[in-house]
Amino acid sequence: MDAVLALLHDLVAIDSVNPSLVRGAAGEARVAALIADVCLAAGLEVHVTEVAPGRPNVVALVEGQAPGRTLMLCGHTDTVGVGDAMVSPFGPREHGGRLYGRGAQDMKGGVAAMIDAARQITARGGLARGRLVVAAVVDEEYASIGADALVREWTADAAVVTEPTDMRMAVAHKGFAGVEVVTTGVAAHGSRPQDGRDAIFRMARVIGALEQLDRDLQAGRTHPLLGPASLHASIIEGGREASTYPDTCRLLLERRTIPGEPSQRALDEVQAILASLAARDPEFHATARTTLARDPYEIDPLAELPQVLGRLAASRGLDPAPTGVSFWTDAQILSAAGIPTVVLGPGGAGLHSDEEYVHTSDVIACRDLLVALADAYL
Image 1 (cartoon, rainbow, N blue to C red):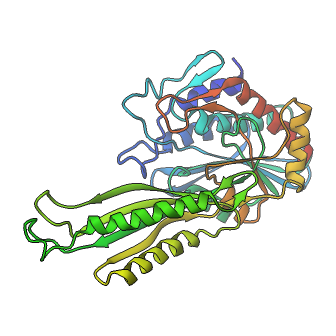
Image 2 (image 1 turned 90 degrees about the vertical axis):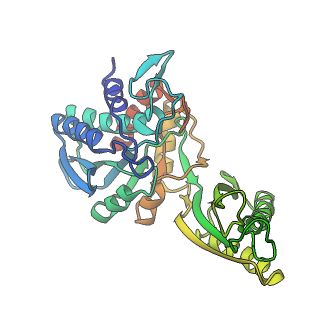
């Protein structure tokens, strides 16, 4: 078995479900310990930093024989949770060129590829010049506290985030903003409409306006690689019991943004809707706040990093054309810190679903491409 696939087996076998998503979940400590041990055994310089209790980033370095530029490879070690229908989520199994298990595609395949790339470079004698930084960070599936901490301590001249892209080079991805809306009514006995004000009815007006906004967004400006912006209602709750007018209703919505749209726009749009509804009904009361927002990301495909990586991909029979991905990644945080970044990683299927797998041939190809990029860029 190729060493990168053996490492991938070991990574998937460790439960690293994000505890911010699932109360009491294992977190990233055990998988970080494995990564640190593998990197130390390979002769890399290793730094382990606890970002939150029991949640460490691991940064491993390959130092060149002479000064030069720095290339960073970055991936996250946390995964989403596991549903009842998922078979053996932490028992990795291979079949038909696929490796199955939670995190196999998102994104332990990419993490294995970047670690084994550094291990191969070290085994052959290291780098002639420059520095390779391999960063395994926590919490990308929730708030990216790991990437935020990473860029406070480390920088680079260029970076690759090895999220799953089917081995296509992504130069753009969408952003997101979560907005919480709360409508307020008056609790009263269900038989006394003159005393009650229904917060759920009032939220229905908000939802109708949001649905129209989503239609307008999807019919509006389109990014050439990402398509239009959008929004959806994610969670709604309200009321006490059937016989009582509900005094509050809470809605959580998510707005997906495209380059050129600041994340603040989502809250501005919702507040405009609430102001319009209040102007028509003085008894309408609602508030809105942003829960978490991250900007979209984009790099000029004519910049040096995508040009170099595109040429290397083409030389290996891969599609060199720049693409975009709909999901958000830590590339935005690296880019905002001044590190030109692209996203490229192995393909597969089942992101966040009950059957997740990664193509094993892609993991090997990704590892080999990252070695070639280190040689060419550094």
